[in-house]
Amino acid sequence: MKLAALLLAGAGLLGAAAAVAQTPSALPPGHPAVGKAASSAMPAGHPPLGAAPAATGALPPGHPAVAGAAAPAATGALPPGHPAVTGAAPAAEGSMPPGHPPVDAPSGAMPPGHPTVAGAAKPGMGPLPEDSVVPAAELPNTTIEAQLLDPDERPIAGADVRLGIMFQKIAEGESRSEMHGKTGPDGIARFNGLKGGTNYSYRVTTRSGPAEFASSPFPLKDSGGMRVKLHVYPVIESINETMVGMRGIFYIETRDDVFSIEGIFRVLNLGRTAWVPRDIVLGLPDGFKAFSGGETMFDSRVVALDGRGAKLEGTFPPGQRDLNFRFQVPKAAETTAVFRFAPAPRTVEVRVIAVASKAMGLDVEGFEATQSGTGPSGDHVLVSRKAAGRSDPQLGPFVVTLTGLSVPGPGRWVAALIAFGIAAAGGLAAAGKWRLVSPAKLESDRSRACNLLLDELVQLTRAKERGEVGPRTHEQTRRQLLDALARIGLPKEAKKSRRLGKTAAT
Image (cartoon, rainbow, N blue to C red; front, side):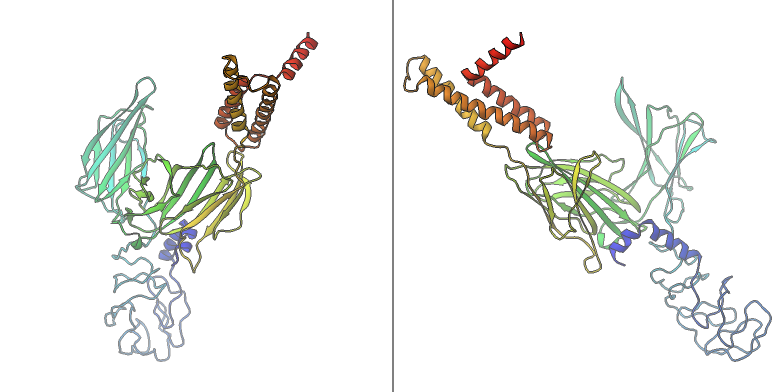
């Protein structure tokens, strides 16, 4: 089955597997009824089962004797995978055909999609058991019972269990401690003498090889204790032996001097084993920095890997785990930026979302046409997407290109240079060391620099209103421009206009 189909089916696939286990498909021609599933039409000459002996006609070769049948059973080998029938020779070993009803005892390996056979629990079959944390009124309100079970709900004895305890209070801060126990024959470890209240929270964990299995955090209540049920699965490290698929989102924001990028990945494990990744890496753009992995209540996480990208670590049991992380990429003074990504194996869908001004564009190589939309904060965003198909079951590396980026104009630097020149010339003239520049020339240069700075202030304000510069860049640049204006001083015409304005106001 293709990974894309697995991931798109999601929990529906698990529900369908459970339904198959309960509802057998139509039996093949000539097959006897098994258990209570005798609703199919019988082939010509087949005796009724569980009814009066009214059958006439010879049975097909190799058919077992049926109680009450008029015709004697023909002798011969049963077809491969046929269940044993009373009075017949034992069934030959082999695989059951798809849709075969449950048989009392397994007779060989079951093919994919075969319903559960009594005594033949096979990973990947049937509904997943659920972990739980529930109140237990019959327990003291200072007690937690933790039970460890395998995927078939059998207790696990002699296993180490850790109870994490977190105390958190505004006036006293946060502190952590832990208690340890071991499960008995019933798979239960009990922890007594615990404290309740909203300031305390508890979490049950256990390890199996490289994997960690954990409950969600919970408090103790006054009405009784808490009972925790935690399942421990077989552990697999190679992704090729799992039913794991991933979906990812990269969310790009253009900031003052960097691009801030958030990655959100959903890992879906449809099997009955826990996956512990081994050297699974997400390729990130060259020069990424300030990497930060998101906080999770479990040990599954993403960590930076210098020179390569981000590495998946921790335990991914059956079900869904969401990972998020942030990093930055330096922003050059250019109108175009290019980012290169490489998804992890088994990634079947990726979306790229960029917060954009009206002038910006987004192009992702090999992805669907870019669409416009509104982000969670009401920002204008550009979105592109790609999903795996039959010919391409997982996504490979891709290139993201942003165009139409705003670049600070040279006005502020020209004005600052003129301001520095005027200030230097004024200082030399005051010291009597430079008399080559006439007062009229200095006044003309002052007026020109002032106009450049004022125009730059106007453009800066408009850029902020359009969302092309962030608040930090706006404030820093504004201060630089105002400092340059203060060093230059207003030209005589501006001073005269300001005096006239004050006079008119009074």
